[in-house]
Length: 299
Image (cartoon, rainbow, N blue to C red; front, side, top):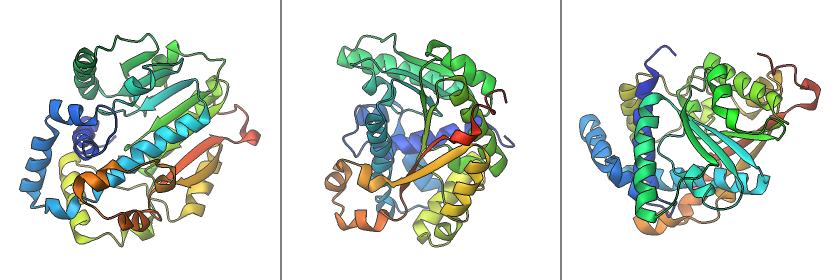
């Protein structure tokens, strides 16, 4: 990456701040433990943001998290690799029972904090560590780091890869590298799929309300990254891009895949907000195209 990739990790606190208004498992505890409120208040103060006008972000973050979790459930996956996991507790939540194996990865700074968070949450809830849940350092742009991360998984079984909140910070070249790395990992295993909820379209970025533009400007200032540099022109552009990399693409609505919205009640937001969000909140499932075979597995 051109800019310091660790700077992107700061935005994990922003995600944690908004998730605390939902009923996502452990979300409120995590937000308190990492000081998400203080971090968000400083961001709002430093960049002159109107917090009241940004409350709609809470159901957006809730939909993103829950729609991914619902697609995982529907997939019947037995093993998962999460890239850029941030401070989400999805891995802990999904491995508390059953046989699912879960590996989550991020950069060193996040993983150090994540390990401490997991220890504290487990202690508070009397949850014993699971041999099926692994947390390790790996850069999504480095395929060899990712291969090391999944050594604990079964190469004979399909692999489900997910990343939530990463793609908007990548350039088009970096997006291609991440996709190629994931395609290689799926080739190393018995196939599988890739779930990602945060691709964007250029036409929609032109119509964002002023306060959301101010928040995006603040995030650019913190991360020193141009947001949505890899934005696609439209769905056809996206499908074509990933077809060239060996993927078939299916898109769903995050809103329709989300079983319930607790953040609407906790923040006093109208249910009609979901109708406004439905057209722009999408989640994609990519699977290796049959014609591609495993030709990319050695890249």
